[in-house]
Image 1 (cartoon, one colour):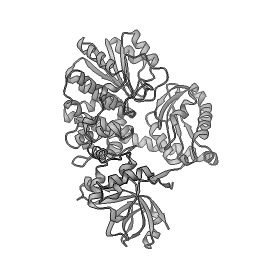
Image 2 (cartoon, rainbow, N blue to C red):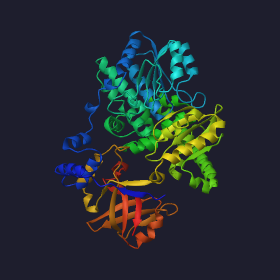
Image 3 (tube, rainbow, N blue to C red):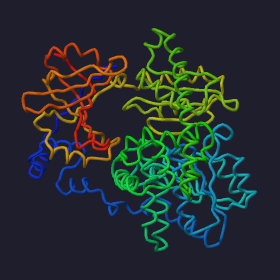
Image 4 (cartoon, rainbow, N blue to C red):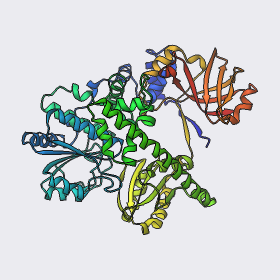
Length: 574
């Protein structure tokens, strides 16, 4: 699907800020434009951006209820109460549980962890789990990456003498659970500066506050930022403010002395000795941690992440790697089945602004991934459902700029349960309600989605010439890492490039182009790769001019000698 190219020139105020920054970065004009686009308008802000410091993390006590949460935790430890650390079975939940459990275990022995099974218990805390906790004399549950809608369950737990501290980052309802404390930067009453923490990030802030309240140096806690970095990358929360700082330092840890469990996964992924990036967390490390909860038990991922022996961690990592291979096979099959159903809808699908698809035999652990694939393929907000414990259970994913949470919420009277974010929602409903939900979901999407949101948009950060791509420019560009939403990898456009005469088709079916390009501003030949763009080769090979949109990839992490490559996203022939 060809994207529309968008370039938004700087406003007059932004141009003034760029001019001021240009005095510092005079030899690299595009750098000041990239900074201003990210809201960085002074040299002081730029220096802070380029040097993320843990000193710039916010005071955790700015989060509502933090004082209550710390006081209850301190009382539990002082009274030798049994504490249960509970979390979701996905990457964010399991890393959050691993972090809080590992950190508390340094100071306190009467603490355990619990991850529900996806198939038997489903999302969040269940009445069954609470009964188990009561039998084990648990009196405090720290619940991570879920719980913000567990009103009935929290009330039931109170009747059993169990208190809850909720650490969540999902969108809350107007009525909150009656917990001892709720730590959630998305609460309507919250003025916490970083609104979009991951679930593990909220857990980190809780442990930071606990350390501060007890005069404990945060060195040990900061050593666990590799877990936070994995959660931030995998949950795709905005890479700004505290998230960027924690990811920056978490990546440093991953590249020097990672958690034993993560080290085992790094070895399994064949990343040992290579620079670990956010991309590796999203596409290699995160999916393996996730596969445990999708295919078997999420608790296995926590066991891996809290392992104290590397050989034990490596054995667990190998098992989880096999789950990931199995997950890939299921993902491929179910996606193909879903696509066949949708292709059969023909013109009717073209008319619709959304997709709702149901098959009672699909694997519950895979449908979130399938929803992402369907959304990416058809570029429409999509819901994929399967049957689990007598309910149609599923996941929804969205396109850029459209709030799918509000779309699902518009039919909440038809739902048994739902929760999530702007771009991803989990939900369950009775099977007989699917047709009406489908109708209402489509009605809401059709009424609220903008025409421009129904096809991909490619946002260009800056127009540059090849002469702009100097060693100094590349050095400064590296310091924009780590990338993510809110600080995406810059997309550049260069016009009127031509083949040096050595570009060629590559790939099993000759579907990719290995490019060697020049423009009229520089005598240097730039290497590039254009995946699935073989259709343009005849034009390129004829040495006709064309425009490219691309990101600049640094190949040093693959063992190269500092060479860069242009990853061409789109080609426009004249």
